[in-house]
Amino acid sequence: MLLAGDIGGTKTVLAVFSPEAGPRAPIAEATFPSGRYPSLEAIVQEFLRQGRQSIDRACFGVAGPVVHGASKITNLSWTVEEPRLAHVLGGARVRVVNDVEATASAVPILEPSDLHTLNAKPAAPEGAIAVIAPGTGLGEAFLTWDAGRYRAHPSEGGHADFAPRTATEQDLLASLASAGGHVSCELVCSGIGIPRIYAYLKDRGVAPEPPWLSAELAAGTDPTPAIVRAAVAHTPPAELARAALAEFVGILGAEAGNLALKVLATGGVYLGGGLPPRMLSLLGEGRFMRAFTDKGRLSNLLAAIPVHAIVRPDTALIGAACVGFALEA
Image 1 (cartoon, one colour):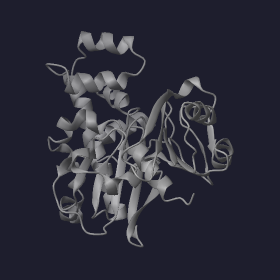
Image 2 (cartoon, rainbow, N blue to C red; image 1 turned 135 degrees about the vertical axis):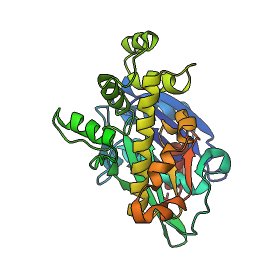
Image 3 (cartoon, rainbow, N blue to C red; image 1 turned 60 degrees about the horizontal axis):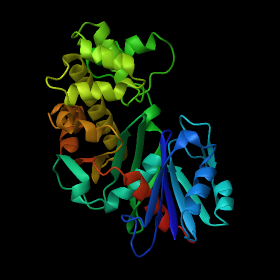
């Protein structure tokens, strides 16, 4: 039996999988508020008390870089370490991977219903695959064909420099740089980036902020969901929020194209994370693909790459299960 987990700063999802049912069909699953527990080990122990399964192996996808089997979780005080988890699990084989690496590991078994296609092109057999996942932060990963199957590789490419393409993006970069510190792509192309883009456009007077949105932003702790709702779900949409999301989509398209070039992703580009499913209409309007393919002499190469948004919410969990099933018990 396999224990798999999707570990984030807000919630932790654990599930038990059997070899017979496979990684797409957990036989037991539970969600825990991460901040209420002192460690992942505490959650694992509580989860296992709820069932009678004997765990042979486990894999956890975590929101943070993994070095030598250990990771400091973003937005939590936890440090997740393979030996400590193995001890709690009675000596089971344990693997800890980055959560976007886990998402990438699920890509080979995704079905058409798990995807929303943005560029319907054929994938090159055995071609490399790129995964870019804007959520709270910006995660990146990729897969290469090796010994008859795809293998996922982690990346911290979201922390590379933000490369502006337009006059607006150049001014945005200058504005953020003036505050000091490194301006990474994640700083603008993620859930933490959307409020920065919004504030920048508001300061430039691109459009007025409607009073109802001002009240909603003042009442909430996380402005990103409110801005996204105002842009895609409100009737009529708030022009300022819509402008911020349009800039975000262009930046995301350009960075997805950069990643596709770096790994030569002729097998496809997949958008993971929590944000793409909430803005499918904006992603399909053309701005994303124009920025994705705007690569000079290699524009035609990018235009031939299939692009999909992942809409299955438990993809990181089933990806962790895929990694876990590859471990020797």
